[in-house]
Length: 331
Ligand code: HPA
Ligand code: ZN
Image (cartoon, rainbow, N blue to C red; front, side, top):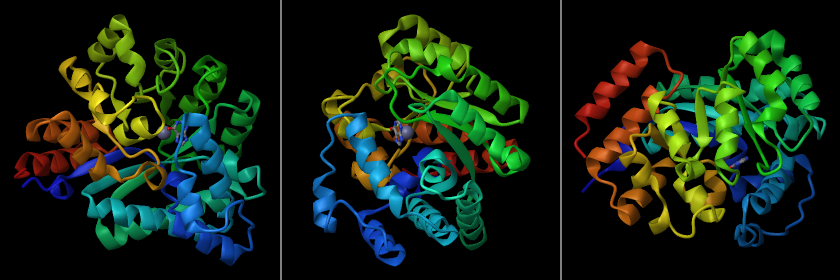
């Protein structure tokens, strides 16, 4: 019997605010005196029947209004990191959305300091590594993204990189060329969501204009054979999130997911949870789902885990150690 939890892996596509479980939403709302537009955990869970990305984002932003203090962000990160550790995650690169907090009057340093405390706690208590990737909300003007970046430029050493998320269609990567150029100037890694709901053209833009090192989602890349060739040639990793894709209607059912085609095409695919508190599972649940519903083999699961390490921003030596542990996994 395969034990996916024992397979060492990295998580590269997790929005830390998307790990905010309904029970924690209510606990923090009570502690912080925040009024919620839903009365019970069950009512909140009942709202998790999403029709598309936007229907999810509306609930995601509503729930994160309970996050106010440094302790809140530290507790959020700790809770996620311990759950992820139990599912075999040895290294986690956490996305966070500062503009969704600064717009509510929460200081960006409160957010970063809290998340860093969570990462430090996990490093000390578990030996788990990780880092932070600051995401810009693409439905807001690029000037606001630039102002957010400049507000943390003096502490860019506390970040691994920058990303681009939120509503995709109508907000192409080309809008953020200057912001990503400045991020590279600050020595930050660059990634971007593209080809989740948006067209293959957005993946091309993320590669050619934003010069990203990984594509988040990228599942629609399969619609463009030339793009598949490019991703394969340059070994650009894709951080795929199968449970998310089903819950947001990117694919109809898990059985229809084209993960196998992506692997067969020679793409550097990784598996991730995206927003686990909303999509029905954490990272190992994603590995299990593709094993059960798509017939992904034990060797392919091992390949997916190995890809997650080589696609990570972990230093070479630490990557090598984890790759040898993956090779030794019994399946
Ligand atoms: N796509 C875009 N923005 C997001 C997502 C996603 O899957 N999750 C949280 N913000
Ligand atoms: Zn995402």
